[in-house]
Amino acid sequence: MVDFGLVETDSHDPLPYRLGEIEADLREILQEYQVTNIAIEQPFIQPEFPSMTKLLQVLGVINLVAYRHGCLPTMIYPATWKSNLDHPKAEREDLTAIVEELFDLQSILLNQEVDAIAVAYTAWCGLGQQ
Image 1 (cartoon, rainbow, N blue to C red):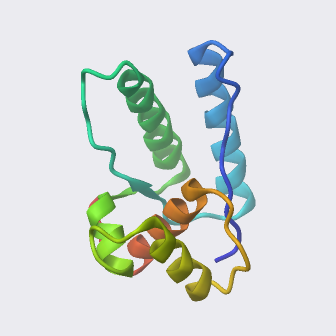
Image 2 (cartoon, rainbow, N blue to C red):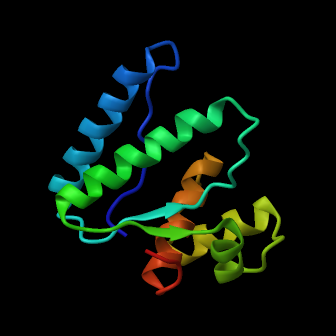
């Protein structure tokens, strides 16, 4: 693992602006690290939630940027990456401890970071679908 982190935007900004920020940040990351593979956690789609529309738009931006960079994202279901580390219903604390041990990390503060690292590791192990 070279690095990990989150791409964040200001929730008060209009959605088109936020999507543009995500696109620019992701392009910069792909170029800086010479990325050849991308893994994304496959969301559980529930149309009744208003935030789902925004999430699907973000996934569209990620897919487009990845395609233009020359790679197709590997989609990983939550149960797949959890099973790869432990089991599908593993506790958050156990998953965090496993990721910290696998990658010799002292402390991961955010659950999203644990999830992102685990998703990438699972794709690296050859699981998931394009």
